[in-house]
Image 1 (tube, rainbow, N blue to C red):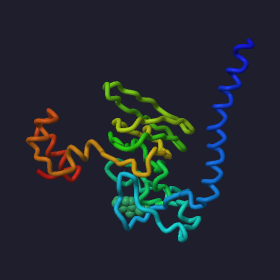
Image 2: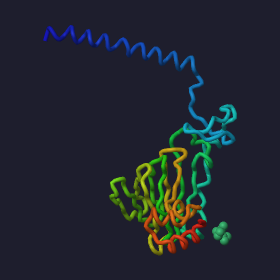
Image 3: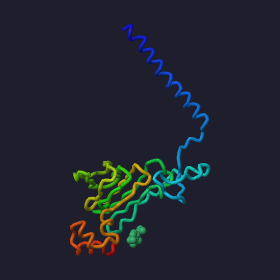
Image 4: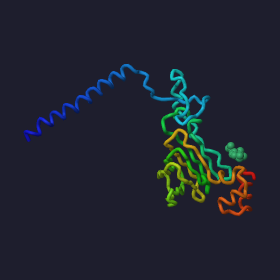
Length: 225
Ligand SMILES: *[C@@H]1O[C@H](CO)[C@@H](O)[C@H](O)[C@H]1NC(C)=O
């Protein structure tokens, strides 16, 4: 016990010195650098980069830069998927720039669907605020995780994995989704396969689908070739 006592004190002292100097350094730093960057509201006139947009002049930033009202209104679901996705990504809500967060509103008419898609840059957190939604994702190991969610239920969709949301028959559903990025990105599988000019023979060879079906889907989704 006696042998350990002084050793303990010594360790205590050497540990304390860096802590103390860190504290002093922190105080000096805060005092000498009042312009710690709290936020970086996007200047959308410049280019988007891997680290986000350049910052709007902080002197010109107002409360309204941190407020977004675009999710209050239901999206128009009169379309082929009977669904609408209203984004609050950095392009719509410049205040989220650089903060690693964004959101969207999903409106789903009865049997409306957000088709199989991925967000290459973000994990998604979904909260059902109205109705009943069947949602699921498929892992890299090709395992399916699917659940029917009621109002108030949440589900997460890990970064980059294919997932979907589908409203129950006869039920209008609304969900809020949150993303771990200001620019989650969106790639819809059906549009990637049938909504562009990738030639039908190549689509057929790479998907094992027959050319007639591919032509039909290209017609529906606006693809050519
Ligand atoms: C919804 O979209 C459809 C199809 O584009 C359009 O005909 C209709 O007027 C829109 N409804 C509203 C309320 O904007």
